[in-house]
Image 1 (cartoon, rainbow, N blue to C red):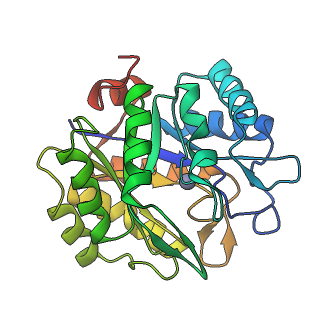
Image 2: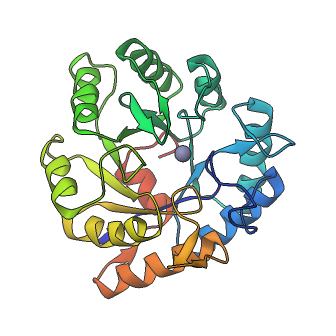
Amino acid sequence: MNKMVITCAVTGAETTKEHNPALPVTPEEIAVSAYEAYEAGASIIHLHVRDEKGNPTQDIEVFKKAMSLIRKKCDVVIEVTTGGAVGMTPEERLAPVTLEPEMASLDCGTVNFGDEYIVNTLPVMREFASAMEKYKVRPTLECFDLSHVYGAEVLIKENLIKPPFHYGFVLNVPGGVKYSVENLNFLVSKIPQGSFFTVMGIGGRASLLSHYGAISTGGFIRVGFEDNIYYSKGVLAKSNAQLVERAVRISHEAGFEIAKPDDVRKLLKLRSE
Ligand code: ZN
């Protein structure tokens, strides 16, 4: 398939309006930004939500509202986070999976997150994988490190997740593995044959370079304010859509068509397909 799948992570857990005033925070703002990203060419929206104070929350009522507002506007594939935010319990993080989104992120190991850390033990990962299987949610196996690729392999060997496998390589988190062509290539070489993967570079430069990395390794692209708030050095992005538009241009230049949500449903064998 010569189609590029573009995910847009519109909000995330860490970014605030002080970092970039265009950050969508309320369910209404998130739905508008998700729709603009979809119109620009994103086929998957990676979804985090915030409470009334703008802090990250895994409250299913807020997820439900954001999801229904997005679905009213378009048929984009929704991938909810189960990474949540630093300090949340596994139960909190898993909650939005019960809303039966088509996809969800599944962190495949423990990782430094700046001065904080995110804990994912194998028992937690098994619990998350089993819940996703139960609710027919396609996991994105998020790997911040080589050990996470092997963590995911445990889940596969134990038959807790079924193919097709979709990995997400998250590179350049402060205190984690840096984004480089060499690191990306190495990680890609370790996943099962026939797997799909999306490349995420955290921070302006890594995010942009990761588009080219994805293109040259056969992966998919992720953009959005969760990963990067800049359009170029020192220049804030105006919107999530602006970042999607650039990813579309780069993909077109490399000879790709842009995947539609229904292409993703077929490719990743999502529930609705
Ligand atoms: Zn996320």
